Length: 270
Image (cartoon, rainbow, N blue to C red; front, side, top):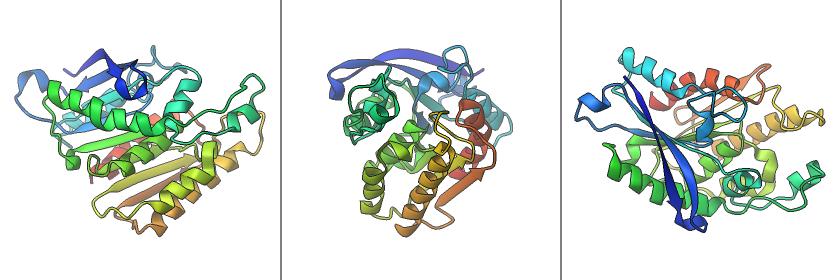
């Protein structure tokens, strides 16, 4: 039977903030001495349990992992869900670059957001990973370590995975919020070398929006995802390393990501 553990951890890179971590352990963890590969996921409150999700539904990642284990598609994975910060803290931590776009979109926001992403990435790749490897039976090598997230979580997963390419061998960037800081994000992708032993999954739905009052938002999401894909291809990633899925009619929510997650994981592990 699979288990989900929850604990709090200090974030020394970010003025000692505390964050809730949710850990899925595979069905045979308690009865074996095996070591397991690890997937790190952003917005951990939305990963497993609909009751803790910000929007009332989850990715059902534990169910996907249990099904893969039951079908003997793999020997089991540990999944680490990292809860996001509240309010603007999420945007601050999930973007390495500051942006005025939220202030321009929403009249109740009076300050720029973003800019703490490099510190957050360091926390995940060093402090958190060291804790997980020290307290659980992991396979700590990069070839057994993946990172994934959606929207702003997709942006910070891409940034973290590429910045710490010696730590991660695969990235899942679902519905990346390229619009938050397009110029800086594209510049970052263009500056990255081609990592020969990295697999990157990206996707987008054609009906995604983060502001229903802006009719153009779905196309902004699609254009951003296409630009992300184009820059990764230009960097040298081929079909064996880079996946890009466009899902017709899919919205910007956990239900859509839950539906695409099993296929994305299967591709990353293929």
